[in-house]
Length: 312
Image (cartoon, rainbow, N blue to C red):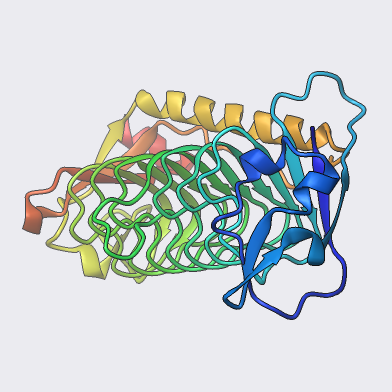
């Protein structure tokens, strides 16, 4: 069973969907689904009072996962897809704060932009955002010491501050820029940024990897091809050139995720969306730290082709 949700009227109210199980919703017919309840400004309200619910049909045989599609602006719907395990949730529009909270499997695709606190306490599954995302992506919820513990996140736009705070494992790929304090107190996992990473990244980092095209604020050291954040000097070792074979596996994994995302969306007629330009380099400048906490995390800065000859 697959369902389509559309607002009955432009929705001016905040709707908390944290306790709405999209796994159960995907198994229901439209009449049953209308009886599921959400919280509207603190009042328990039937879902059918807010949205039109209809069957969703695909022309492709063998859909891998039951699917719920929400079409329209869902930026005022909070914590959609919380604790999702074995359903595909597609937001054909913008998503609100907290989407994918405690994601434990399945897939969430946001075709617009997303708010703050996305993928809090994420454990498994795939979350893809085609627009920009707010602060604290893939971090811990209030009072928890553990951030993201597994799964894959793809962001085709840019991300705000405090990305992947206290991250334990998993992969996050950002095609745009990242704000300040990324990878704060990171324990493990991999973050790839093809844009610019803001100030004070990787403070308190113990393990894990940040692959970053540029760090800001930046100063030029003796190697003109390498920009090092002034805020990291003394906290990380000096950059050293390395050829890292594991990067080839990482790029292959990212390419596989990209292919799966495009395939899943094509099943529902969504084709021609933005595609990731997955890197292919294996030569990087490598810095280890945070030395203040005896950390052995790594920041990898790609060496451009013009600088490869001098490194070999």
